[in-house]
Image (tube, rainbow, N blue to C red; front, side):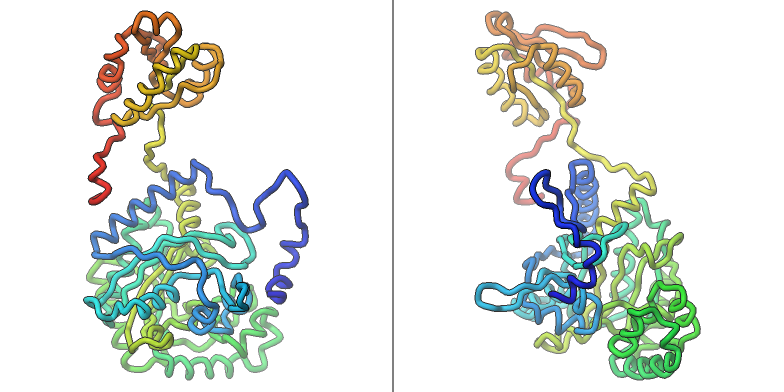
Length: 454
């Protein structure tokens, strides 16, 4: 991995020594406030994909390196510069997964999923790893949601996959921030002809390309079309169009896809320069571009990969899918000022003074939690005033107060924290009183059996 280290040497030259410790560059903690977004996004995704008959899959965080080298293409940026690759104790080369499709296809073949009803519809919500230059919305460890439909070739499936992505973005309140960019890159045979035409077009223009694209001209010419450097963008605008080299089958497939999208009322931008950065794509490719920043802030994309299963040793099997970055989704939800619902508020704080009061409070706290009352308390040895300040910080609307006097009298004080009023309640009636005050519809309850069916 020395070549990868060299590429990003400017980012990693400073190594912190000793405490206070910090995260490595390019990774970040997901703090509770952001977990509210992750939880909500996962809930939306699971709901929509279950409606469409998808089932969840999780593949290992690392695979044999060849799974990615063979499928993504050795000349792609991901494989040549961005993979976290290491050897195990037996000298076998392993790689932290940089994307999801290759691992899912490997699992499809290994687990004989071709024997299931086709197409097999799978989705994942997982972390991935790329040794990339950290910047806004781009991390070295990042989360993606991905959808794979394996076992059928039909432009109606491509349309449904695109529609699912748009529905999720709409549910999350950010669909208006993005435009659907659409293209067809044809079959591998037609793509070879187009690559040759591109190389002819760029012949003699090499000095106008950025340093990275000068290397891509021989190894991965399609990536010249989506470079963001100004001179490369100008040259790409005048480059030959993919549509001139498409085979008849791909043209018909693409025309049918657009008809289906029109029928669904889905707007799209035909983008003949759109290519995906991985070698396994064929025919349909699409991305969701930021309407204000273009491809720079694309939130995700996908396409068809009909030859990938066969490339990995399985039978000839068509497939289509997409993936979206969850960190980028969250950034755009915040940008759109989308607030997510959450259930992390505290209902009751229990304040106590003395060991005997704490002994009475502990079983009460457990009973309250079992009945859906979110409860914190019976902790520390602070004064009652100090404990009430803590209750305020947690934002608890109700506080149960017990001291030595309350223990002797067999009562507890229930305090309304918003108005400062309070009343004494018999200890055995505290639970029912709180359920009434909080309201049954607000309790966080479930029956254990729901774990089987939820």
